[in-house]
Image: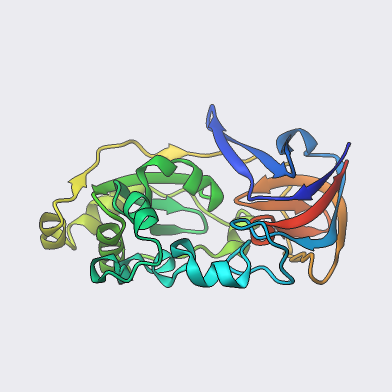
Length: 266
């Protein structure tokens, strides 16, 4: 099989507790789980197309955009990384219509265990994809709010008590212990009762979700692969976790190279 074209971050689904992956490449979508255990080769063929306007760009910004789009799109603004800094109410949102539909919709505050317990936020419509993208082995929704800024305020309030980032190296080596997220949830919510009431956040009673990944062998040492430094990357695909391909030659973050034109051979 040989396909070529611009790639996007891998699409994910959860089937009977197991993550499944597909890679959009050009006009095709490749089922990546079927390639596990087989040799593959990925070659950057030199072009990058902005995922918004389609124009060629010599460098990718904000994971797949040209510089002008990265400066003009709300989805590339700092408030996407720090939702508590939302400035929509000030009338300065880069894309008010997009901001209204994306940020003023139900959001979930959750706990996940990817390299250890962490707190995070996501749109209610983005579960469980968000957790799979982070390589979490378990996740638990704890609160539902009406907007992104509300979820960001709760996340910020919980940061003194729990991590909000994943150690990606530990995640890829599967150096993570099972954790009772429900017990952690109960302790955390006791820390912020006033904020929960003020934001009218709804406490959720969901069960903890466990996620298994299609991995034959986890790396014992992390070697990060990069199309900018090594245009041609090959190896046996040992597995997939998060948005990473785990090759016997190293790990490759496919999300980082969204909009790169890649030739895939298997």
